Length: 226
Ligand code: DC
Image (tube, rainbow, N blue to C red; front, side):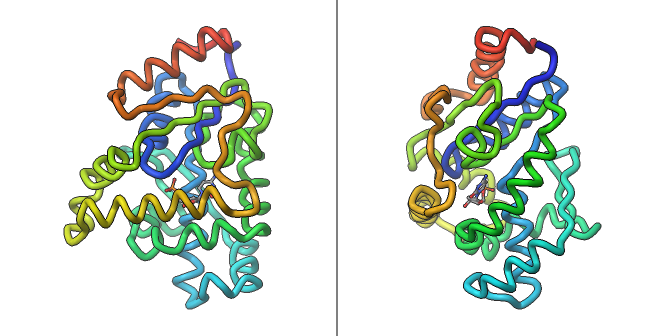
């Protein structure tokens, strides 16, 4: 099979975006980071002076905004109404509010529709929380990536040291545990492993090992890939 879809789900800091991007590059597929879409909405809401609990206003902003994803040198670039917000959507303020925005059912419906359209022509590696279970239930390969909270906090710590030098490893561990809990307990499309997803615990694995494992699954389970 030449073109197929891969859904990669899992909790914060499991390495989804790095791995999804590398798998997509190797296969010549398009990478779609759905977390970046929820972050873009959150950034736009906060910028507009709207609080996450003002649901009607949040929905109206989500309906009106244009979100574009494009491949960049250092990962996926994100544009809102034509402006580059790639860096802004990773701020502590956005990170601290995004789970609340992602709980709003209508926001999820709008973004899910966009995500389905992006994957309609196949050849997409999409990462998120509900891709295999909800957005692309027919994806040819579904992977659920996980790792211990401690190792996920350590990875994030290394990743963001330049931007947030004030944050401690313990704070990050707490933040990740809280976000996991909110993502797992929300009513609409919670973070869940799809019944037909392959579980991959990356606590003891390097990035190249995980990528190689997924490429192997493409060959054995889908009969495609390199
Ligand atoms: O992967 P990330 O940390 O950039 O995701 C940001 C937030 O968006 C995260 O708290 C959960 C939410 N999210 C979601 O609810 N559904 C998705 N498909 C992707 C992300």
